[in-house]
Length: 102
Ligand SMILES: [Zn+2]
Image (tube, rainbow, N blue to C red):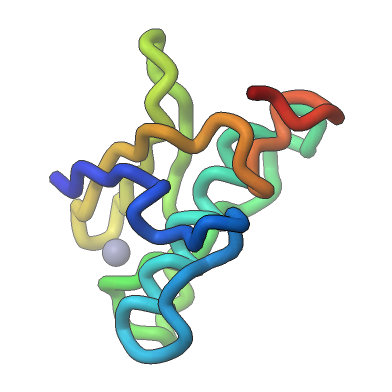
């Protein structure tokens, strides 16, 4: 179980902080999970972000959701990797409302 504080992956302006490498890939995955989980207008069948643990060519999408205490969670049914993300509210990938919150 990964326990993530999204702000650790963002720079002071709110953009993804790591430039490249595995940290960047992981940060891209986390922000995609937040966008997928918080977009309540998307069709249910929209696939989640591709699992960063599974082999790329398998194209395994993760399930996403939001817990009652407002953590974004993801789970990969293929490899069992799961995690939770906090402090995503108000980030660029928070799609819960059209307005940035503070
Ligand atoms: Zn996986």
